[in-house]
Image (cartoon, rainbow over all chains, first blue to last red; front, side, top):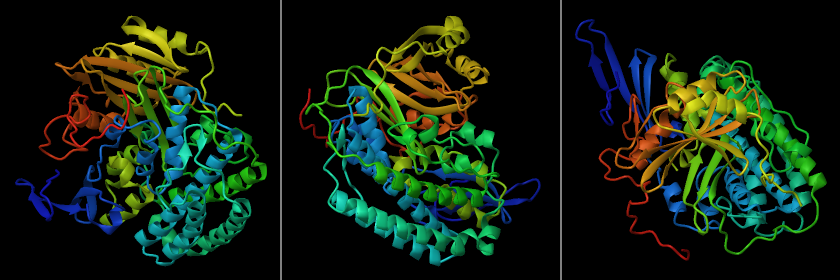
Amino acid sequence: MVTDSGLSANIVRDPVTEQAELSINMGPQHPATHGVFRMVLTLDGERVVDVYPHIGYLHRGSERLAEGENFQQITTLFDRLDYVANFNNEWVYVRAVEKAMGVDVPERADYIRLILSELNRIASHLLFYGTYGLDTGAMNPVMLGFRDRERIQQIFEGVTGARMMHNYFRIGGVKEDLPDGFVPAVRALLDQLKVGYEEARGTLTESEIFIERTAGIGAIPPEDLLDYGVTGPLLRAAGIDYDIRKADPYSIYEELDFRVPTGQTGDCYDRYMVRMLEIEQSISIVAQALDKLPDGPFLGRVPRILRPPEGDVYVHGENPRGDLGVYLVSSGGTVQPYRLKIRGPSFCNLMALPAMIRGSYLADATVILGSMDIVLGEVDR
Amino acid sequence: MTTGDRPEEPAAPSPIEARVREIAGDSAQSVDYSFDELQLRVSREAVVDVCAALKSDPELDFKYLRCLSVVDWQDELEAVYHLASLSHPHKLVIKTRAPIDDPWIPTAISVWMGADWHEREGHDLFGLEFRGHPDLSPLILYEGFEGFPGRKSYEMPEQVTFYGD
């Protein structure tokens, strides 16, 4: 019984049983919703009976805007989708156009993309680590997480000139070569990240309060997760080792040695743990890629004006939040896409939110929502 | 030089093509390839049955709906289902069309729960009714928004085209 009455709380009383349900609104301006996300919770005492999510507050029409821009310009729109994992977004888009055009990517560009994307995965998970600490009542993680994330951001700024909206990946390569001193700087960064990772162990990973707060809540059966289209750390936490870097390998992931961490129950603690273990794996991936980083051109031979042949391609990649897909339809001979559909992982993950929260305590609702690590820029697009 | 995602030319017949043809049977309007992906076209009346059969078939096992897109072809609206299997390395694209003056397609929510918001989004932006969907209230747009901003016919006055055809 969802009463969508705007901003105030609302009591609905059953005329026969005299039982009352309280309907409260949470968001869109609420610190625990991690953006402009709103949900209406129906409560029976302390228990959540139903949840109705509302999205769309950040809808900018990215898909439609893309139909009016050249293929090279659309990278900027992808920066603004998942704004804490910009490189991962850009990468999937440029791969989609490269597939449609049949463009070759120089090996060095592939390595540069991979190094930056994996660093961005670490930065994104560190942001999760910090904000999830806040969600569960710990103040330290946000300081530690942002400190390490800032170190990564400085590397990004040195490479691309921008802290967030990099617009660095190009169709067929990257914008410019890595700056001098990049490799030693990243090696030093990885050492710092390893220290920070050990510190996290004390703050959350082994904290009894945190485990009590997160273990055993938010879990739904793995089959249901798959049915909803949930991917990424949420799915892996439930024990399904579906990682596109392994299941449908792209770029040079096949040449690198890493494993896919999985959880067992899929509760909020497992989700946290999977992300932390992914940080460890990403540090190893970056270290391996730095060792192998080849010399050579950073941008392939690409026509100045791109006109992909008629047809449609669907390309996906492993974003920090899951399976980011780009469906690109080209009508042939035009410099703009006919249709560009973005399958955002947070968008699909959010569909499972009511099933995860239903039946839990109200106090756990924010903890469950936080464990999903949504980014509204990519939910609303 | 690595070839990245460059499709192999020519696209080799996919091992699942025969099985897909067998399951789709008479419902299949065409089976072809776009780049390296197998595509199946079915009528809108048959699409849900075909999807359900493809999902429950153990050899195909398309339990994961990767994406559901709506494409406006001016005179027709097209729903595109991207499927994947987690137990096999199989992928499939299903396409079905509805005329723009009678825009409905049956909902696939009974097959995959994950179709829910994709269909609501398609209803919002393209005015394609997913018949049988339990809740087609606005998801992306606000209540009372006029028009279908995903359609080509929707005017976007502030849009500037720099160069192109």
